[in-house]
Image (spheres, rainbow, N blue to C red):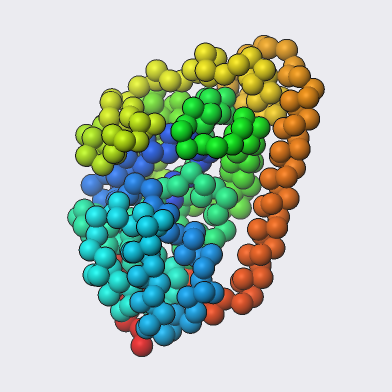
Amino acid sequence: MPCMSSGPDPRHDRPIFVLGCPRSGTTLLQLMLHSHARIAIPAETKFVIPAYARRCEFGDLEDRDNRRALGEWITSERSTKFHVLGLDAGEVVDEIVAGPPTMGSAIGTVFRAYARLHGKARWGDKRPSYFRHVGTLLRMFPDAQFVHLVRDGRDCVASLMEMPWYDKDVHHAISAWREAVDRGHRLAERLGPDSYYEMQYERLVADPVDELTRLCAFLGEDFDPAMPHPEGIAKRTVSPRKKWHGRTHDAVTTNRVGSWAERLDPWQISLAEAAFGERLAEYGYEPSGLPKPPASQLARFTRTSTHRRLAQRKAALRERWKQHHEPNPVESRLTPQNTVTPAS
């Protein structure tokens, strides 16, 4: 049933960021949102956080030449994956140069151009790792809305361990899910129900119409009947080379729910359940009933988790230093009407 709105909603211009533990189903959710007539969310790019991290290197963005250098880096650096957007690089650079002199404005300009290309009024972006960078995204887009997709951590771990691009061990995979869930809890308290929304993968694939209707209500949008059927868009936009996304080409299904029982070794399941603690039960995920994991594996997980926390604290200290030395404000100054205010 459509989620009807009573008129224009101020949330219609707010950026949407999809996040979650890797392999939690965020690509499926991105495709569902992109199927909406008003929302454009592209395949993953890699320029938002790296551009922000390099903001001091680009210098004072009041200088048009520096804005041009930023735009050219976004559009020509291979690692940014700008090419997946299908945009004209020169036009995007010119629009960044003509736009407001802030990092958020430059990044928002790229995504607004993508939305225009698809005839959409609203833009968003998806990267699982955004759960670590919500503070950064809020600095650039204070009015953003965040959608956090949670999946059974054991399924996430099992899937991660099968990925050809994942070069870490099971202890890191378990840590990633625990970190995503814990940060999600803190974000819910910090941002409140107007800016943060949490979904469960299992409910999404079991009843996509109901779950997406609720999501649309959060976003201030009408439900679009195309959303539960993202396989058509997936066939056009998800490369067959990315075999790990191959199931997005098929109709939404619950077939992979709970498949961790066949994909993980018993000791890995026990270790994950011990590390996750009550977090699984909070989401209604049933324990396996297996005995406790080997003490050696639990100790190794503890070391891995500790090292990750220390690395994150060091990164936070570096970020504080950069904030004291950044040459410009970073908040987007784009107007709500998908236009830009020229800068000098």
